Image (cartoon, rainbow, N blue to C red; front, side, top):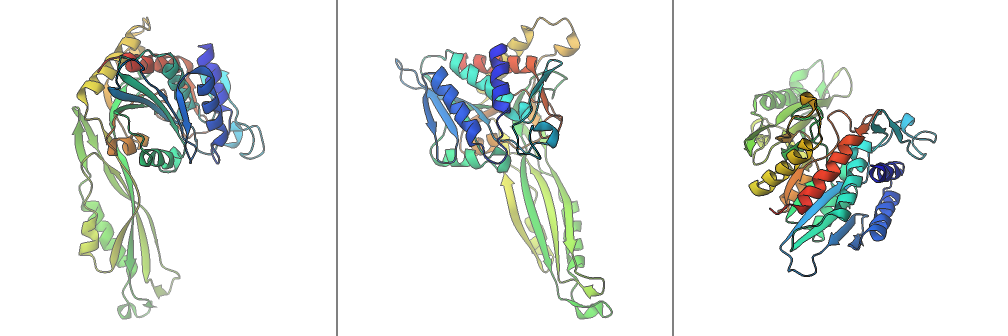
Length: 378
């Protein structure tokens, strides 16, 4: 436990919301000191490492994947003025508290130790990747993929604890994506006393919104688990002053996509005069199509849980295959052909908060799960 907690505390203390270089340096240094892996640092700051079997031809590559950038800390989470100081990390009540403990330097530390300690089956290459820019649309993952990072399978160490039951570390076989769109309604300005002389962009936007409200949300099924997306107008902006017919109105649409299905937003552009649809962000969903991998990972998670020796059945429930609602770097990897699963220590409601924390016992469990998956033949 001490090594895992100490490594987590060391990584969490390093600021990485604006510049993740120092955190990447620490990870790279640890890998070079603690393993005989081939370690690479790419042009954007990703840290990649490979442990290759020397006496057997490479059969498959399994990667443990995380990220070392974080969202900006709250004032209480830093020792300096504003958000400029070293991050505060506290060990209290069986938990580590501070920015990045849950999302996701704790799980990253567990990945590092599992990567070092695992004895993989003959012919398997173990890979480790810690990306930058996950919180900024997958900048690091997209760069690495573009440069040839293509493991056959990957465990992405985002949070999956507490989905099927409190305290249970589940295995997510799918997650939603996020497509952010803007509908721009254009009209013709006129004095409000003569509205018929113009074309009201807000009215056109309202017609577009009515169509959005009538669209079906996307839905899919992955490994028997239902994945249901959503569609919502989240922002409307139009008009300049009280006595002018508006000539422009913008509508922001948040859509949570699912594997293989999306809402038909293009219908708006083709139906309402003067409305254009543009996509501002498109984070892909993820679905694991490798049933053997999904089942093997779940078996490991269940074995680790069963070995905890807990008497309280309410906290010793068996892990399940679940669906994660949030987009992660697994979406980019899956889109490039990697079979991905998500398994990690963070619980719902912990990431990106000013009270962010993670259970030390859950980090230990994740370390054992990661090592077990690395050692399990699929």
